[in-house]
Length: 313
Ligand SMILES: Nc1ncnc2c1ncn2[C@@H]1O[C@H](COP(=O)(O)OP(=O)(O)O)[C@@H](O)[C@H]1O
Ligand SMILES: [Mg+2]
Image (cartoon, rainbow, N blue to C red; front, side):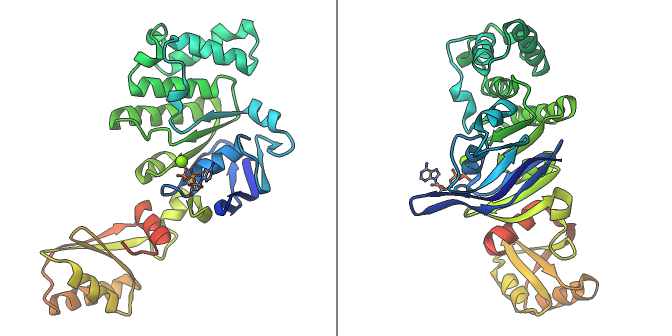
């Protein structure tokens, strides 16, 4: 069963089409990543899904409810960690009181509130910090508290908008681990906005790439990674200016894609068994000095750059 399903979902602000007829399906239990550069339409999509914005056209079913017709039911079954979500906590209230306040807003019965808060604070490793004012927690702990708040009312779907964007690498790693354990322990389906490829590749089992409001590619992370051709790329590290290497690669009819990554030429070659050594010879003949020639599985980053930028830097 799909926990999120959008149908021609569209949002237009004046003459900006922020979200352009997107069709997405997120099955129950998945950790889904909506990946795209700044301004691609990720936050607008999440705001539509949690009913903070109304679509211009199209609709979506979230946790079994239509965002147009049943916004209240959507909110009751959906959790939201907004962009910069930890800024929406009350800084002078303790961690515990913040959750208590939001639990009442969510309409959780009074008798259930202390148990639920303790369970979540313990799960997130924040129980010892429960009396600290939210504003005095470390950035990472504040984000964990915001995550607690997002799932306080036991939603079936949690929408997280750039959950690790402002965190240092260690705090970000911890938050990612917590997201994965929440998915396992509570069966929450996660819909995560991110511009961080490595993050999506690590924790999301499904991914869609969005740019200019349009979905360019969607599917299982592994599948997407190998979607373009053989799923293999060659990296040729050269000495000095790599632009000559790029022009050699671009002139070869068997090269499907070529781009530069610092002093490394990254190429996708048709029929690599046969053409790999041909490319090497061509480079040498043109006087390119090769430091290293490596063949790798294509990373999500290669796919991403190929679809978002058309393969050009
Ligand atoms: N409330 C708004 N009014 C006008 N334009 C908006 C509004 N919200 C977002 N946009 C525009 O919509 C596009 C998508 O924005 P957003 O969804 O925030 O992208 P992302 O989260 O991927 O960075 C951008 O061009 C942005 O400037
Ligand atoms: Mg955003």
